[in-house]
Every structure is written in C-alpha cells, then in structure tokens.
Image 1: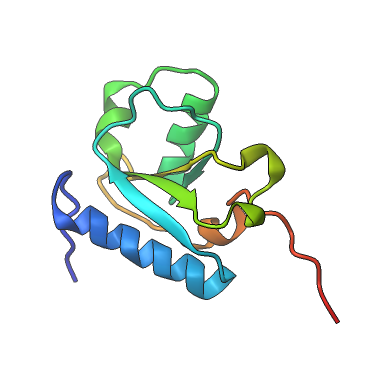
Image 2 (image 1 turned 90 degrees about the vertical axis):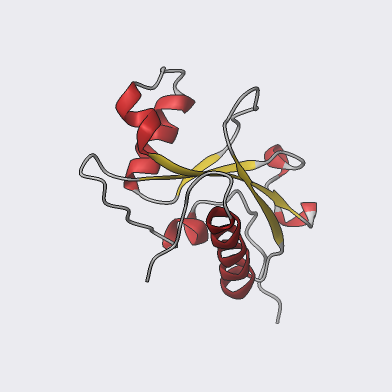
Length: 130
C-alpha cells in the first residue's frame, strides 16, 4: 500500500479522515481534523505525536526549542484536531485545538502509533453509570 502524504495533496486529508473515524470508533468522540501546511502563530497548548519522532518534535516545540533542519524536514503531517462536543474535553482545554504531529525517522521510515490517540487526547474521564 502506498499513500501520497505530500503537503497539499489528498493523502494527508484522507489520513485525517481515517484518524477521525478511529477516534469515533474507539472512543465514541466526534472530532474534526484539518491538515495544516505549516504551524505558524498557533497556541501550542496541547500536542500529540502520532509516532515517536512526532512526539520528540512536539516535546522540543513545547519546551520552546527551535527545530533544526533535520527535524523540520522529517515532519510528514501536521493536523489541527477540534472536538465537536466541548463537554468531553478537560476543562482547561475546552475550545483549544490539539495539534497532531507525524514525522519520519532519520532513516526515512514512517511509524504510526494509533494508540497515542487513545491515551493522549485531553478528554475527561467519563463516569461509569449503572
């Protein structure tokens, strides 16, 4: 299988649709995901690496570090995720987007860790009802 993830092409948008469906199926939460061409003038309140390389890049940005050329060129996809129902989001993040970062390793291998979407989103814990 091959998927063209070139910025501005349909591949990134389609991967965003798959992520949307994955979150709905696994968590029962509706989100909107928009691919971004660049991350300029964004409030970087919450991010989620879709792989280990994306997490390292997010960590660097979170701590205010500038990215070197290798890190910048390894980014394959950037997404902005917004929750359709603000009641599922932790109070401190309501109305704030989550940024998703997908990057390849230095040897140009792309790994995707969809479990990060299940454990890393700022959603409040729903109480069990009997």
